Amino acid sequence: MNTNFCFEDLTIYTKKCLYISNNKAIVRNIKLLNIGELINKAEYNNIYVEESFREAKDHNDISRVFVDHSIVCVCTGNTLDGYTQTDTITYRLEHIAKLTLDKTLTAIRSCPANNQFVNVADIKLIELSGASLEEVQGLIEYRQAWIDRKDKEEQEREQKKQQEEKEYVDKKNNELAEQVNKAEQSIANKQLVKNVNVTIYKSRYEHNTTSLILYMMKLYDISIPLKTQGWINGALAQIFWNEEWNEYSYRFYNTSKNSEVFYKYLRQLVGKINEKYGIIEKKKIFDPEIERLFRRTGV
Figure 1 (cartoon, rainbow, N blue to C red):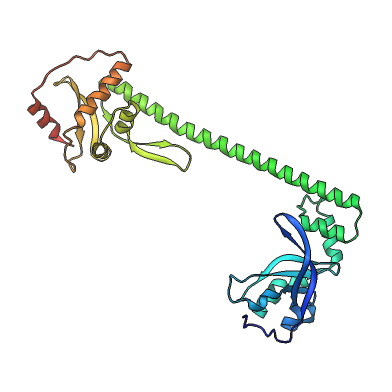
Figure 2: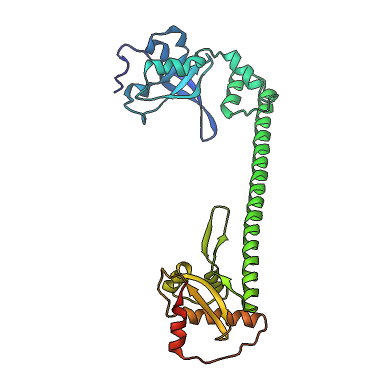
């Protein structure tokens, strides 16, 4: 039970209340406690809280606040919980205590002129106040037009966002494609290619970074074991054309060990690029032991 207030002598009122549920205006009787009586301040006598406030123990026990407009008590959107104190009530509900039915109706009727949203409870209150069917229908149509316009604006914003996202991703991936093309041209022309990091973008915030050589090998569907992929990303420094051996070789960082298998994948990559550019390779046979020792020079 809520121990912050004395509920013993409070009257429980049953009043017709207006609130929104599932985007529909609901009018039904609800048991309420008077806030003015609860905190002993007469200026708050037009404000009520659900009777469940008596049993509130913590922040999870929420009770709705209503303002009495004589024809109906309207849900204000405010709530009280088990930790609510008198000072909190006076601070948060002071402006509600000054609300009158006339002020509320005037504010609702001014919404169309001010391009402001009208909710279903606002329209229901206008109806309960005795407004004409024409006025009520006009507010219904205005509300729907407002929603349709906002939905359209949101769709346009989303389309613009998606287009900007696409342009950003396309720009980044086109830059990567150009980087790959330059690397292929370098290989075709027997030039050095540094194994720099490259980034592949799926979206502005979803991307993957890998090394240039590994990325190119995957582009050419060269199947590489995960361990060797890790070596390519972390150890491989560059590939270069060795005039003495008349073939592509590579250097790796001297902080890493050499890979015993990378060379065969490098040969596949060079072969596929040469095939793409119509380059005929001249085969040369080397002593495997000399070849192995040569690549251990590192950088």
